Length: 328
Image (cartoon, rainbow, N blue to C red; front, side, top):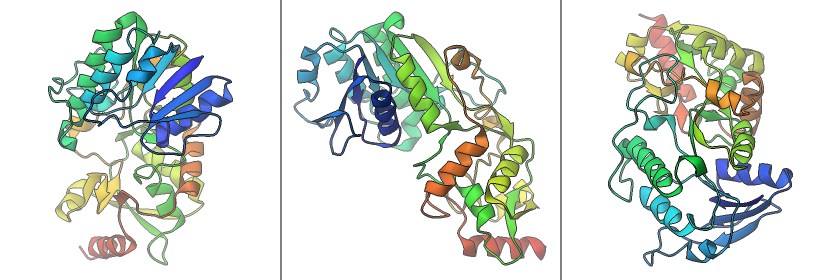
């Protein structure tokens, strides 16, 4: 294939480009900055350009497929305008955040999405789901259902995850904050968790670019939180869980999911319990292959440079909370 990747120098886009090169395809990456993966051609362009024609020269060429990981609706609206007449297929990487509700266990791709964002620019993360929905709308309007693929990933993990959401637990079990080896974990054993490896997602996106249309949840196999922690502990080879009630953690100012002073993957609000338990049956039927969770956790943790990146507790915070829990 002659494949155009709008991006290709970031985390997921870089893996897509590398996977496509390994499969023998001809790859052009469009990004603001170098470097692009080896074996690709880099076109330096800024999709924020005021002149509104950053992709116009590429629209004069034929492309078997386009892969786009953009978030701002304006970027996608302009891309489909410039490429609809010369690209055979368009793969857009959206997000499960585009769904209007996250409470139902096992929900599939027929669930409604949020109202698409009217603006061209996502002004804040609160508009993330609406921005992704608007990008989906733009792709489908320009390319139609037969020439479009909409992929909605859940939590992505593996080498290069700098959010800390998938690397925190194996690294914390490997490096407890205290000599006792105690690791503070939420007492929520049945909470669904789900992680898709960036490498599996990238390889599958290249496969979809061959002209597989449809809307797909790109999510890992749902596993209970207790099983996820057991896999992380096995990867780490140590650490002992100390369970803390969810309400107690909230009272101590511990944030769910991500960010400073947080515990990753923990979502105590029932309205979010379905986010990590969406069905991947349609994606599997379309060729998605998933590696074992333990491999994703191990490889991601080895590649991570610190215990706390964008999520988790610092050593001092964990020691303070463990002491408070013990002294209740």
